[in-house]
Amino acid sequence: MFSISSSPSFSTATQLDKNQRSLNQAIERLSSGLRINTAKDDAAGMAIANRLQANLNADTQITRGVNNGVSLIQTADGGLENINDLLQRSRQLAVQASTGTLSDSDRAALQQEFTQLRTEIDRIATETTVFGKAPLAPATPQPLPVKLGDTLPASEVLEPQFRPYASGVKSVAYLPAGTQNFRLEMDSLAYDDDIQLFTTDGRHLIGTPLAGENPDHVWQHQNISSEADANLLLMNPSEGFKSGAQYDGSGLQDGTGQYNTNNLPVTADYNGMQIQWSGDGDRQYPDTAGQSGSSFNNGRIDDQKSQLEVLAVNNVTEDLLIFVVGEGNFNASATWDHMPLEYTPPPPPLGPVSTDTDIVVGADFDSAMQQVTIKATPSDSETLGLRNTSLDPIEQAQAALGDLDRAMDRVSEYRGSYGAQQNRLEGVAEAAADKRTITAGAMSRIMDADYAVEISNMSRAQITQQAGTAVLAQANQRLDSVLALLR
Image (tube, rainbow, N blue to C red; front, side, top):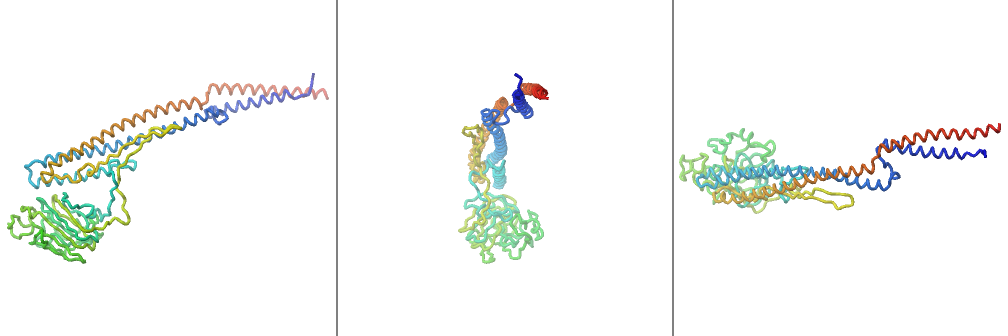
């Protein structure tokens, strides 16, 4: 039967449409490199690949976090190594100070170095930081009190028990206004160290003269022999003086020839304050050879009693700066009935603290997160048990050996723990790298296109499309033959 039906044309057109879709899919996969470009390509495969991608991203971030943890450990261990070196030197000094052949001045010199080493331990502990963390800082927050320049309030420096300090041209502490019944006792040991009291604008209230007919040895030793020298070397904002402060010794009560640590003979009344001082034992006797065996103003103390100085202030009405000027080391203690907390308000920033650090080592999809905790390792002098350790007198030097041994044991324990944790984290990083490789391979097998197959499919689709186009033309030509009969 010869009819005018267009069924062959429709069938051919349908096949051409299918071929076109196959060709488009092959081109899409070849151009993207992926077998699954949309959910319709393989919904289940896409869901699996999505979970694998989540694991891959997690493992990548875990590796970064673990590397940061290793960096933290290495930084902390470096700080502990420095602290251990300081402890080794401190122990060497303690052994030396325990020897009975040393003079008082020799032992005082050792104490001065020990004090500086302890201060450096605290500095390393608080300033060893990485990623905003301080792994060696104290375990509890320490408020950073308000300073006058670099000078701390007396409540942060002085204690009721005698502690060693280093003398020089440097403020020891300041007395905030409002302090009541303050008393400072100072033992200069074998050195000539003298208490000096200043206002923040440069007025010298109590102490020894730095110029004039008979300037004191302690100032001469520090190359300060005139008001100009004092303005240049002493009146610095870093020491608590106001900017532009000028030395004024017009009201100085120096107490030359007066000395008594029980009934304080030197008195200064200033701005509603009654200030009392024992005087300087080195300036007690104007004779060349004094009755006590001390030579006048020679920079050395021969009589043990003359080593002591006492300062008392009944009611502080303005901030006062305490200096102990000299060339060596001294012990001091202080008491008071009331001293304002100068750092409120506003509250000061808190000092850094060491806290545990959690490092993520596992975060697979639909699984509980896994962590490794790097424990805090506070290594300040107080945590190490060295806050009140002293090398002077000899009994304390001998006791210091035990304190230093315990401190070194703790540092060694910290370093051993860090070493073990670093090895573990490096193992975690290697495992995460292997896992990333495996996960990436699994994703590739699910998501990536097989180029050999897709090129074959594209070639087949192109051939069938070309053939279909030719066949469609033939089918349309058949209808033209029917029209020719009608003509």
